[in-house]
Image 1 (cartoon, one colour):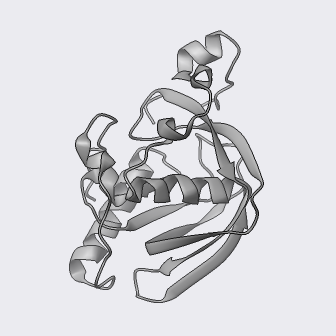
Image 2: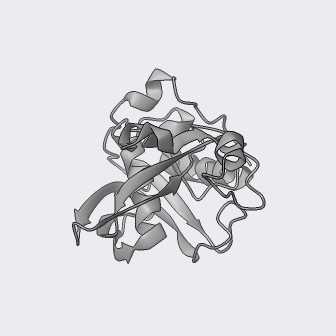
Length: 184
């Protein structure tokens, strides 16, 4: 089990564009993916991008059966997505609260497209394509933004919809999940 430190907002590594993965089946990539899952599970994350642990490779992971940070969310299959591509299936957007392991203790309301198709490779080099909507689409879009050096606060339209969990809750703006401790 290798749990990595998650880089936090302000670290310049998080603002860089990641490189394509040449061999998704290499031992190095396999170890990286395992480390990413160990790290994501340790922090109860819904997803994690390789740049968040300091690796500029176009790899994201996501998924859960149940997640204490998102108790009302439908399960998302645990997924490895290498060199992802996103296609919008609708231009309809929805704004909702997001958090990030790289922006601990904070939440922001972010507009995201509601329905997408994502395509990429899994850890075995097989092509993976899914059409998804709702929270599943939000998670994928959030994680894929990391690959282009984008953190969710950059997508917030109204900065009044961004803040520390405790303050947002205290002022009735945000209702966290029972286990949302802010540690991300």
